[in-house]
Amino acid sequence: MREVVVIGGGASGMMAAIAAARCGAKVTLIEKNTQAGKKLLMTGNGRCNFTNQDQRLMHYRSQHQKLVEPVLKAFSMEDTVTFFKELGIVVKDRKGYLYPASNQAASVVKVLQLELRRLLVKEAYHTEVLSVKKQKEGFLVETEGWKYKADAVILACGSMAAPKTGSTGDGYRFARQLGHTVGKVLPALTGVYVKEKDAEKLAGVRMEAKVTLLIDGKNHAEDEGEVQFASYGLSGIPIFQISRYAAWALEDGKKCEICLDFLKEHTFEDVREILEKQKKYTQTRRGVDCLLGIFPEKLSQVLLLRAKISAKKIKKDWTEEEIERLLIQIKRMGFFITRCRGYEQAQVCTGGVPLTEIKGTTMESLKSSGLYLTGELLDVDGACGGYNLQWAWSSGYLAGVHAAKEE
Image 1 (tube, rainbow, N blue to C red):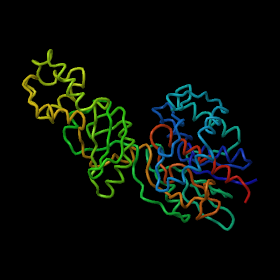
Image 2 (cartoon, helix red, strand yellow; image 1 turned 60 degrees about the vertical axis):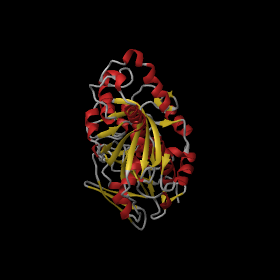
Image 3 (cartoon, rainbow, N blue to C red; image 1 turned 180 degrees about the vertical axis):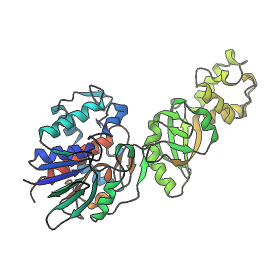
Image 4 (cartoon, one colour; image 1 turned 45 degrees about the horizontal axis):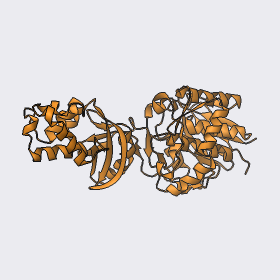
């Protein structure tokens, strides 16, 4: 019986352990936390958006994006749904975003834990791996209290994102020790700090907007949804979606600007017409009262300040130049990014071990036979919407299956 040690009890680690055990291997799962799935419990605001119906490659980012697709096809979204249905999860579809019907991430974690126990996977919790050494035959995995011999080792340690959940970058160290290169790693799916001081005045405001990221003045990425203003800058899913591009651009010393369109369904002329049609009954209003019913008061104040329209000036006295400046702020309010938030706030990381160092869809290392790498440790980061978990399920399953096979 082949002995497989899985290091890391996150999404890809649990999947790898289950797949290997189902294929007949004797499996040990080592996790530094007191239980498996700690980070998984936080996903989807605790509801666990575990995959997505839309599996276009554009939702996965990597230096070698074409190498992502075969992995996702070898264990697909449909395979993931079948896997969880068989474990007892009833799937709820929200516009293609798939959740457990219980709306609880704990349900997903629990069924995985129960399957690990059904398969008699040895679970070593509150156990930190100190080293992974390649031997003439197999590997030696050393912890503070024990040494594990293994025919195959699966590194499923995660990245450095959300270190409170145990992701401290140990996997990068082990990968390097076993011959791999580790590319630059940066926080992704995170908020951004901005240069403009008036962002502080908007703290607490949530507003639907189209978000455009400009890098050195050129449009680079777009998204839309609810933008959240914070004392440090900007947050919310559309900001998360473009943050990885900003992180790399800032690393290269480029200028990054976010432009917000608060009325994306309307053109400049549409907005001008809206303000004009209201004039009959709003022409004697001052300041933020002129924008009632369109924007929250805090946002109206900043829009007017940026347009250089006095709060005391009644609407009928606004000049054409002032109205033009206001339209620009409504449709293209700009913020220069100074930096992205750190690993503590990031949901995932961008960068890591290049896919060119992995053998096809087996997830086996090309640097050290019998070693397998999964999940966030690799240079793949998905968009919000279940994509990082799908990568975890796909890479974890394939690693487990192939690690369990006799050479």
